[in-house]
Amino acid sequence: MSQLILIVDDDAELRLLYRMILEREGYTVAEAANGMDALRFLSTQTPDLIIMDVLMPLLGGEGVMRKLQQMPVLNNVRVIVLTAYPRFRDSALLLHADQFLVKPVTPQQIVAAVRATLAGQSYPDE
Image (tube, rainbow, N blue to C red; front, side, top):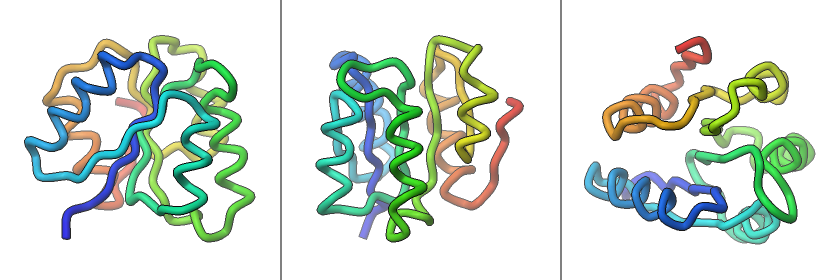
């Protein structure tokens, strides 16, 4: 069974791009357009990894990460924060993001980050 990745980003084109990259690598991918959609998904399914933007309508990435900490069943879910705003790095890492990437990223960077994170390696400074 392939590993499930939830992509949470309000940009539909980026979600599609990330989906195509990750599905080509053999991952199963689900999408959410904002933090509220992500929480609805997480109430019924547990992904292996979440790739999440920070600034989104309804509920942003930091809010979702705070909720994750309150849900013991999701304690083992890895999180990669992928945002255009480097200023969110410290808060993302305080909220236990496994990795922090700044957009734009290459397909190779996404795949490398996903592989490393799923293998239990965190490289928040890269």
